[in-house]
Length: 367
Ligand SMILES: [Zn+2]
Image (cartoon, rainbow, N blue to C red; front, side, top):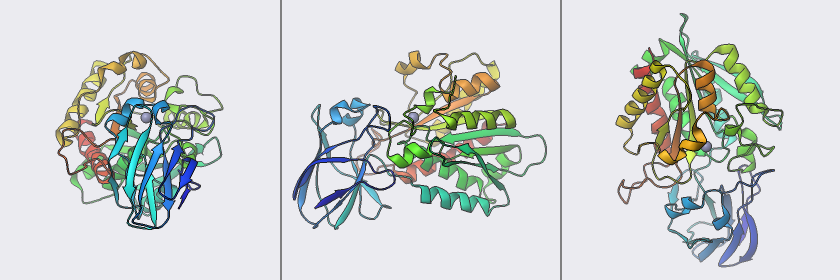
């Protein structure tokens, strides 16, 4: 048996390897101490019961996450399923008998560059879309944005960004759901929304960190969603998007994330000085999304102190700068609690569906 993580988004360190298992360490982010994202392949004879121990799980960035969490497995990188996972307070353990000779294990369903590129090319073939490069990442990767909509009147400007946190691949799955629905000319919600708005989508604002297999940081070790107040040359991603936002303007802003700890979807809004109308619209969209997504629960209150007036956070900075409604959406890494034992509604299909419902909800609140 061998274990490979030397590929895009791969992350694992093998400390000890036998025919029946391995002791593993999750590698910290580049230039930073965050870690939790893992993604690796086991290549070996099938039908052998193997035990894999993640020896540093107890020091991961979100230790509480392990309590609800189950590892994802795939034989073909398309169909993913969860397997029983144990956490004893320091080590995370899975026992698995693979039925194929190559098996992938991951923290969540990965979303890779080739998939993004295919989506962007599909966008480019639509008359509704203009593809733009708004800048470069720390390592020089292009920061792609698609501008969706061909309305010619003064229209509302809706911004959607995803994956400030590198390992939150569910955010990019959701964004794909939103984009694909907007590209459907026969969809009545998309048609109505695009008659009054243009939608500016950056599917991955942290392509370096994502490709490196980081959990949160970009290649320079920066948490981008704490860097909006005074972005410097270690986070050119934020400098670039702020410049584009200031040139184009922002009327609505959606920032897509994944939540390691909580086994449900939640949607939060900024805690800054905003107009009453912006606050009303924020509540209204949250209600519209809750009606369409049974996995949604109220935003956790314990986040309060970190959020209040913290302009390092994208949603706060955008709301304060443009006096507009803004949201952070958080999709779970864990299987949603209380949703039945069998179905896991929040793997990639659930994330795509959430993104599609964002189109309907935005259509209700955008005037
Ligand atoms: Zn995040």
